[in-house]
Length: 142
Length: 142
DNA sequence: TATATAATTGCAATTTTGTCGCAATTTTAT
DNA sequence: ATAAAATTGCGACAAAATTGCAATTATATA
Image 1 (cartoon, rainbow over the protein chains, first blue to last red):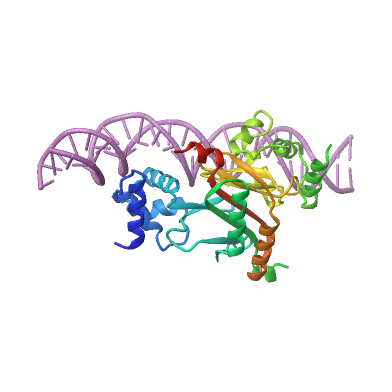
Image 2: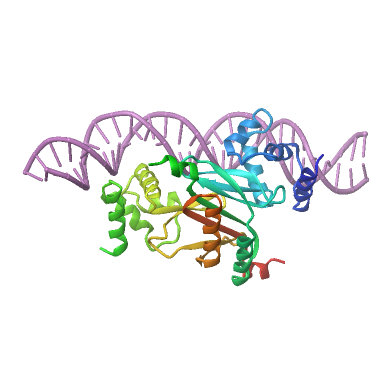
């Protein structure tokens, strides 16, 4: 069992939830993956974990900060939170729908921390989504 | 007719769409409002504008940058874009679900512009969503 | 390791959300 | 005022998400 799975189990226990087979299966489906849509996750686990359970699990995971939703255009995808991989943001090309993960930018991170202080918030997470047109599409589009 | 409605009509015309009654109704439902969910908008306009039309209108509005989706937890809400009110971000309390609009922060705006340059993207919009616990809830929660 | 209790799951039904084609209506340009 | 084009409402449909409940699985404790 790898470290991230241990962390998952620890997190679930800490919040008083059990580390069931299904939950671990859902987690594994997300590990080392691009962000996935709900139906992708459901499909990937079909025969193993029921759709209702996948939904309930993702909801739970979101609550205990194991996953986060990434919003892309109309829809959304699910990815593990920063505990399980490097913190990053996304930049999306509106034209070709390319999704680029960009490394956490220390300036922005600092600004957000400052904002939190200003509003007396204790931050648990943040997401920055940038939409634009990538270089290739800029050149192609007349 | 106020300025923002004029701007709407202008925007629609510019893109070759007509400024129909329904579209103006949808726009009005959003003006001077907190961000609304789709079903809130549909409900608010029930009897006046059909659900399918509301969806088609919001889709169109998003395309011509009149509205943007704001993602909050599982769902999303719709609000007018920065053309119709000051640019801002949101900070959400996970505990009491309070949604606070925070003024555009010039540091963050600048950092985002720099990022765009780095990745050769031409930015059309961005959204920053910060989740945390507000001061009140920090004090209440033991 | 066996067992009681509590938590979790799958199933099937249902609700909610979003989409589509098409005829009727409204808007726009002339 | 009128014709052409765009938009709308309707109703049917498809997809996504939720729910109650009985059956199963996990957990804690003996």
